[in-house]
Length: 468
Image (cartoon, rainbow, N blue to C red; front, top):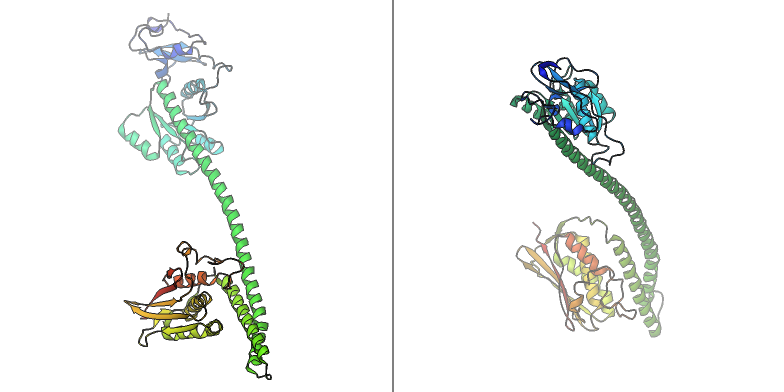
């Protein structure tokens, strides 16, 4: 018979759960004494003597304890636990506390590693990070709160859940733990079911976090790979664009130079500077001059296409609307005369100058006039007019040609698009003029308005601000 009138008892290894229910008044291990503590609580309570080897405390009274044997480890043939492979680091300077915690967690399928002090715990975490840390507070050397602070200050370990195990039950201790970054608290002595429940919950959260991190890393890797691919493609496109611009520049130069000589020679022949010409010769020269003009416009279209998607570097200055309109009319006079079309300029003399880039505005008007002349019947009139409206000046080019069908109005500014795209179309060109007009006008902060009626003609207009 042991002290206080009861005998030491041992629990069969095959019935570990009976050990955990020893707090019941009907338990054969309680001996009917209310002052006995259950195994699941007394594991974490200090005691004196009477315990040795792998024996664990089942219950104790005021001066004595009842001893039982450590239950065997779970059967390896049992079904795998849901938390299998999750690693828990238990940190405590009391070896028997570590034994008990390890036993409970291993029964649930956890892999448990232990450390007896804070320094050892930090070293183990640095070597192989666990999924969760059970951390005692009162330890020699680094106390638990300081260990927790260091873990939460390190980006590599900040998301490892830390559960503080402490016999200190005051509010201040919990405040200190929260300030250190602890994720949860368990007060000693504690219920083993509560321990397992909280550990499982935090490990589940940790695994979800790890999954999200893994997905993020995979996504970042894919984004980085895709970004690298896009950069390579962009660099290739830039190189191709550079080669295209260089090619167009070289071709236009090589074509313009001989064409200039051809046009000059044809002009001299047509004017009789190189001798008299017969009427038949004059007619042939006129045809040749028209072909040279058409080739010149084709070269200009190629140059415009090369500049279509380049950044427009505009130099804004006060520009006389009357002068730029007259200049554009003179530039289109030859093609207009060949089609027997009259170009009229109607610009008030007192019209204020506009804020514009002179070269770009000239190109806009030339393309609009060229487009109007090409689609106007022989003997008709094309008008270029300007008028002041509020704080701006409206410039319009009107023709009396075939007009544009309503369903094609939103497409005429597309590159290469032509209303009559057949191989037998009467008007020449590549379909770049209006696309360039739109781009240049928008670079001035304005937009092109189109008013067209089939059989009546079309009007293209835009507004520019008055120069300050």
